[in-house]
Length: 273
Image (cartoon, rainbow, N blue to C red; front, side, top):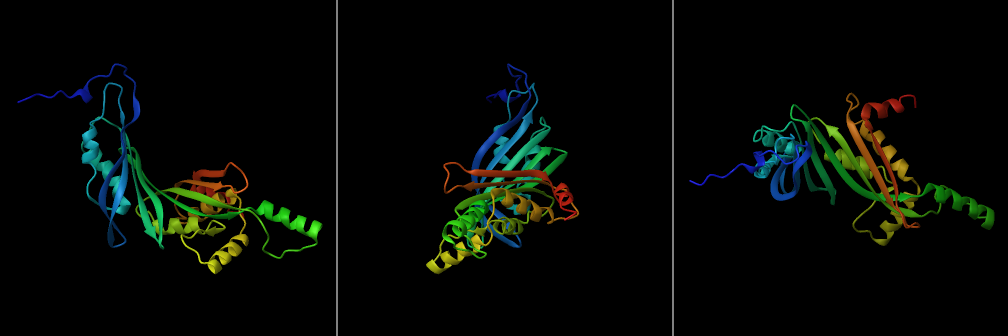
């Protein structure tokens, strides 16, 4: 019988520890169980572990073997993480990211479930992205002043401004339930107005009017998302990262804002309001 050498277990030429070694963008079809229902989804999986300086490489096939064909959605990244560490004994920490599209309210949202950390202290995160519309409040007030001063035209509550399509994401630590629908609702309600796949003329007009009632900077978007997310679990202190990027209509560049903090800190900033 042929004897195959375990090259991955050899000592490397340069004994330097590696933070992450593994696979990226491994795609497969899995069944996900969520809220007493199940659906098939094509997932994109990235898996990596730390390597000690005396080990040449990771057993790559074991990362693939750790991905099964069916999962509880809330636990998919966590279960892959634990399955992986049942197959290897030479690493102390790891990272698993499972990304897929989630269908909700006739729209598709990118979702990532993440498990990472030391094998004895694994933390779970969910990240959801959505797109919406923002209306510039600075331009609105500037135009309001110009129209009154130069043209003697006074606007009421709804002024003129330029618009942006905004992409926002919310990454937050969770314990058991990823709360995908709640997170999506938080994102969608924090724009000037959510975007729609199809609009008839009247609906388009109403959407623009409603958006102009709620003008927002990109900074306003991340602050509102952070505020709402911080009170989802008011007794817990969870890591959170909120990002928002506005694709400008009158500039060749984009506007960006980010909040990275813990939910208890967010609540403490607002306790005197």
